[in-house]
Amino acid sequence: MTPTDPLSIPASAPDEARAGGVNPLDYLRQRGYVQDVSDEAGLRAAFAAGPVTAYVGFDPSAPSLHVGNLVGIMMLANLQRFGHRPIALGGGGTALVGDPTGRTSARALISPADIEANLAEVLPQFGRYLDFAGGRFGDNPPALLLNNADWLAPLRYLEFLRDVGRHFSVNEMLSAETYRQRLETTGLNFVELNYRLVQAYDFLHLFRAEGCLLQMGGSDQWGNIVGGVDLVRRADGGKAFALVSPLITTASGEKMGKTAGNAVWLDPARTTPYDFYQFWVNTADGDVDRFLRLFTLLPERRIAALTAAGGQALREAKRVLAEEATALTHGRAAAAAAAAEARAYFGGDRTVKASASFSATTSLNAKTDVVPGISLADLFVRTGLCKSRNEARRLVAQGGLSIDGERVEDADALFQGEAGTSVLLQAGKKRRHLVQLT
Image (cartoon, rainbow, N blue to C red; front, side, top):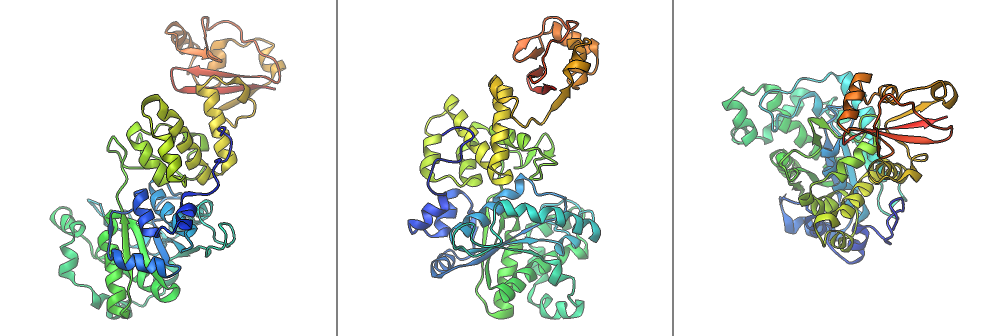
């Protein structure tokens, strides 16, 4: 298998597990998605009985989803390939209330206009993972893409209190860790206290309108999700299920999706496919096995083969993780281009420079920019790798500048290049820039 090839395997992990008669619950547990289930025997029976409709809610507080959202997305994607029906639910209504879970202070309120703008950017991002039209993954049911503002916004307050609020115990809610901590510290406002009610109503609405039996989410949402399970039972006498995944942190203990304080976005305009690819390549050795199961559709035998040896052998496993995760989010072509860019940057592969879609590129005209004479120092300044010629000279003295892997010895030497070629500049260990001569 070459780095630009699609996987040389006949089927995805959920396809193979389904063909082997594996129950989806057992599969999800094997892949690392399950921490708690409200009724394990009941959910296993429901999966065995026929297509189950399951949903995950996503907060539109930003104009893009990020890597931290991927566990929920991948759970839906895996279930759809098992023949079940996923619902990706945009929280256009619940965002107006604000989830207090995990917060030490009240969330800043988001305007309805900002929520709508964020949803317009967020909702299409699910299309890489889920099939909304049908036929893309065989005869599996098409997914649904919904916005809970459609049913929460028209609710009449008095009727909501009578029909939904009466099923909730204030004492029970205040005993929950989230609410209890807030009461003991900064306090809890009435709007936040209602969040559990509106999220639970989402489950009741989807149970009634779509026959939805399962809500999934992170383990920090356990209380809110179980509140929906209880509401379905109390209001309609129905049987519904909760399943939560462990909160994913890296081997260093950092929250998944954060790197140097910045989110790793699924929107290529905010995190380029190359930077997205590099996020996965830089996975710690101790996380590779787990992340291959969580964030790719590779079968178990392939993951076992990739991670059988440690140390330097894990480089190939990290490359496969990066290429598969990037392909799911941005498509095979973008993943192949990111891999090619990485080979040119880190592997000295000059043959791919001209075709790779580099994230940092400058074009120079060989006749007007180069022939009159441009020093190497000026070239590094022109690309932004150095702030000034003096900085370039200082870095040269420290051995910190190179061109196509060759160390620059004289910052004031003239740059030599021909039209139709390209050179790769590097400053320090990580900053690189491609110069294309036209």
